[in-house]
Length: 205
Image (cartoon, rainbow, N blue to C red):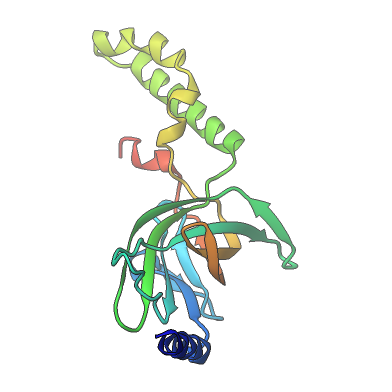
């Protein structure tokens, strides 16, 4: 019995060593791609959701429990200067799903590269001031009465609703995680193109 167990363990160890190393890639998904640069870098809008997929193969072996949790991703984003110097900028990953087949497994998520807080707050204040001016000059008495209340609004109350990416060229370093354990690392270049401001969509045409 002991010899049989040792043979089984040796066989399993040999299979593990024979497995090919994993391959991983991350890419901007088609709905988010506006165009591509001459070098093939995905160009995206500063106002739209930035959808990314990271895929790795082969998939992880199924654990004895028969339950496999989905992969997760961490991101570090650098803005690239004209001379390709890297500047660390804030970012956030919002997971949206994942899946697997016999050849590979994927994780899907949204990447947020927000504008600076000062730029966001200035845009909010300008929008509120514009609304207050319109209300004050309205022929409607009820709307005129709202002008003072609008002018006194705190910009922080709207901060969480603003969705606008920082504009420029970026290099993103992704870490693909099995729970908290890194299993792959991938670098992705992308470019964010200016298509207006968040508040342009809220102003009357």
